Length: 537
Image (tube, one colour):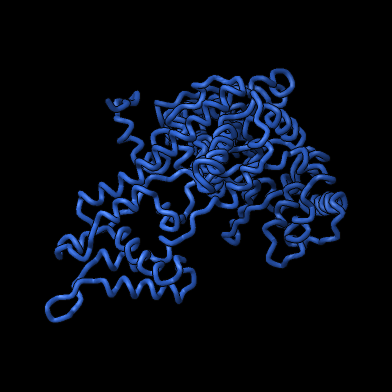
């Protein structure tokens, strides 16, 4: 029976499009997520809107501020009538109307007070999203969440500049969904059952219908054997050799009584797939790095399921897999009759099931040795892990503490970008850091008060010079950029907030579902040029 939402809608219908992206298990992760937003700014509410609509479990807004006129001007989730009332309460009430399956709560208290007096409060959240926090409070929050292993997403809109920073000690991605990948067909080391199936088919004695409906994978394998027999058992590697194999396949097309080749689409498919289907079976370099990671090699009773599964797959590769990862168990669509396609599909599925069984035994053995619950990793999780074992990724971000410490900051990268004439997007990172220094010193942002713009320009220059000096960088920043930051006056434009709200919500969903690769670790958007850059700062 299909799950039904509070509104009475079938969840498969309500969330149809997103289910196609991250599946039932991704949606389940989303529906159990607890999201914390610090400050219901225009950017913050835009992010929450994009998380509430796809159905997160719950959200909590922490905000001590009252609604002001400037809030109503750029925040669609605050109204003129709400001026003077609690910004957290008003935003929660209006956001909750977007999806009645999502529960909302709010706390009218400053984040710094919660960090100071109730730090465990943040431990229960799946992810914390912070907007418009001062540097001191942000660093305190960053260190707290870093130790709690809770991801922190810092978002900010400052005039025409958008900024996102992901802070997480370690994030494991099983389903990274790469944009392009080769099918796992293993023609260079064919599955025994596949060889048996191919050998059972004699294409020379087939009628026209059977010949033209033999799956291209079988066609390619048979002509590949002919090519290998005349080339010392070697596979074609270079362009010339693959072209010869393609010609061999073309010559195998049936001809009519006049000697004209018949129209056999399966042979055309075999020719088109020569290059990709002959991709060597190997363990990707990113996965090899995970196999060598200390977290994989030195398992403990506290090890996460990801690393236990990674170790089990590593041991499988070294033994049963004979240097190869578990078979993925899928084949592409192709011209074929149903009977032979199903047989071919079964060959790969059965081998994948056998590999999963071998990995499962290793997982259970490791859990027993580590003293962990043998049921803590389900068979479904093991199957998913094996199917995606070629696409495993681990994201480890630099902590805020290290980024803000001149001795551990990635100043080399910053300096390289500042020296690059096309690296002006990174200039805004240094300027955002500078305006925070300005705020720390003067308790307002440069240009916030119209009558002080000129004096603020001078003071912001001084803050920027001090920051560059702390980084031991001799780079200079054009006055135009400094004037522009003062002209912004820390304004938050709704159009920029809407854009950053979409990008940040996307990154939050990646973190919640454990699917797709999040940024690592800083994203800067320049609306003036419609450009963006991602940096590991």
